[in-house]
Length: 379
Image (cartoon, rainbow, N blue to C red; front, side, top):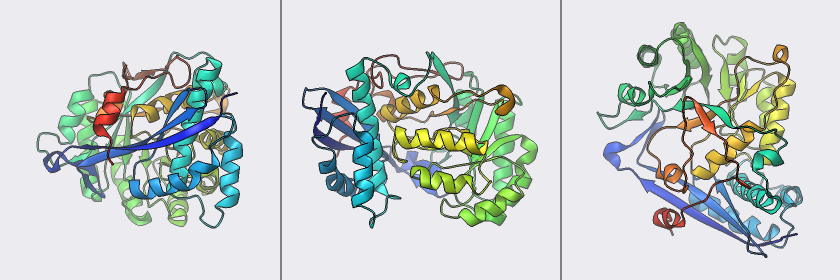
């Protein structure tokens, strides 16, 4: 059985320029980045993963700390390495970029496992054959470019067959109403409309926003309060008029359990590049079933993270209809310009009629263009 011989972390950054900066209610960003993890086996097999790219210096510091705990291990010994980290790093805790590093390595080890066994990752997760998974068009950013405002962003995708669209809100209750009204006018009455506050509100303002925008048939409000504000989330949940989605900023099943125990989260949104990888995300799936919630993974990075999320959703089981929501789990597809997603994969994964194809090759089923990897790599 192959063993882990080498692990490399490759930070990537794409600059869009201040005039084209875009973002959410918390601010606009002129760069987007991530960290690609490469795992190399003693037989030459390579696997690719992705670690959430925020605070790359901190992430790389954790990477150097935990990398030795993986070297020399059997490539299937993911849990052994993870629990060794939990034992040795108990005073450091894991609700930080340490878990982002683990996420990237975990995804890469699944990629290798699939290549060793000749199976796609979704098969390793226990799924039946699956051709495609549903997705939603994620955009509607606050943007500096006067030619890339909400109406321009939605107009580019409104006729592309997406059955769900997400926009950013959170700049004030009155502005929320204006943006949701405009979005509904552009996409029409049939598609689902999702809104994302990015944790910019406290409980009271989030509730006021809910009451103001509920007339526009909002499918969910995402991150209405700060990710640390479990008490505020619980209070908001008791009087919510719109389903709540949360979890993209949370790590490990410990935090997912705490979120769901507020009884305020209808849709859990693990980010596979941050939460601990596919293994922790599998735990999140089980937790949501126990709490009667749904799963919709957060995706905002490279082609690697997108592929991992597709395999993950392809493996989410369907219970008898009477025991589940009529809405399927959705993969987030950010339709803003992103060469780390569209150029990094030799054959990019593209949506069609609101569906994303499931890669069928071994492992993640994608091949990276390593010239693109070198182009956007930073020292």
